[in-house]
Image 1 (cartoon, rainbow, N blue to C red):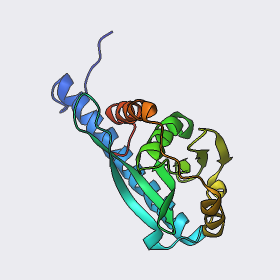
Image 2: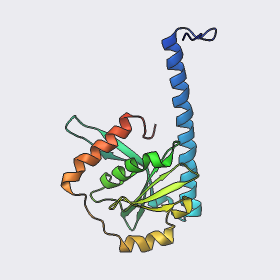
Image 3: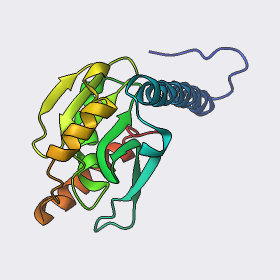
Length: 182
C-alpha cells in the first residue's frame, strides 16, 4: 500500500515527526488543563489550602542502570505528613493505576497512604499499601475534613526493602513509554 503525502509536507520522516510533535503538543495542553482542573478541585471543592498541596514533587527512581528522577503532579499533606499522591493523565485512568501506586510507594520515606489517578473528570483512589481500589470518581478523593480523620488512622509504613527496586522499575517503565507527565 502506498501513501501519498499532502503537498508541502516534505519527506515521510519529516511528516511523521510533525505529526508526533503535534500529538505531543495536544497531550501536553490536555495535561496542563487537567492539572489546573484538579488543583482547583482540591482547593475549592475538597477544601485544602495551597500550603497543603505540593505541585510537581520529584523523587529518585535510580536503578542499577543509572540515576533517574520522576514526579507526581500533586502531594497533599496533612499536619506535615504526605497523605495523598495525585497523578493526572489525559489517557484511560485504569491504564495508569499501577504507575500511580508505584509513585505513591516511592515519593517519601514511607508509602503515601493514598494514590489518586485522575483525568480531571473521573478518578480512582487507591490504598497504596494494599494496592486496592477504594473509591471511584472525583468525590472519592478525601475532603480536607476526611483527610484529617484518615491521617490520624493511617499507618505511614516504609516500603519493604525487597520491593523498592521493583517499584522503581515500574515508574521508569511508565516514564520511558511516555505514560508520565509530559
